Length: 128
Image (cartoon, rainbow, N blue to C red; front, side, top):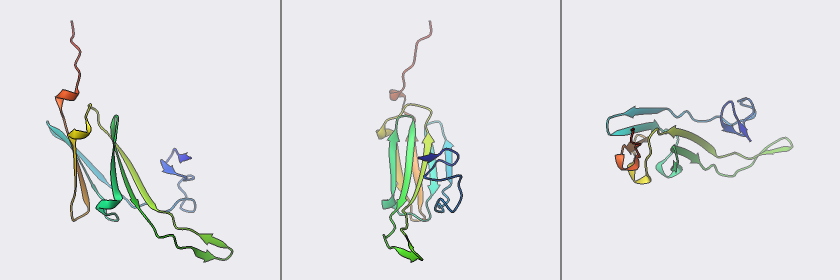
């Protein structure tokens, strides 16, 4: 189940009672003549907790922090902490291959993704 309003899994109208707080991740997308540069700050995540998935028309950036499975008792209920997960989809408007994408993660927790514009992946139609 996905809350269509917020795109958060298992969220219900984005009430804090029903969802866990999500860390804020801001992205800066810039375009040059030869590439698209995507930069995001993941202050609460490490390099090992990030994953970039190559999707047909863009990139899916996933950050997931594993939380220790300690149970806390509150009255008769046991509360299991859930992992912190952030997903962002960045659409790319031109065809690209996995070889056209490079990524780096700095000590300041900034993820930088560069997608090269490669004309060999493009098909053009001749106009008569």
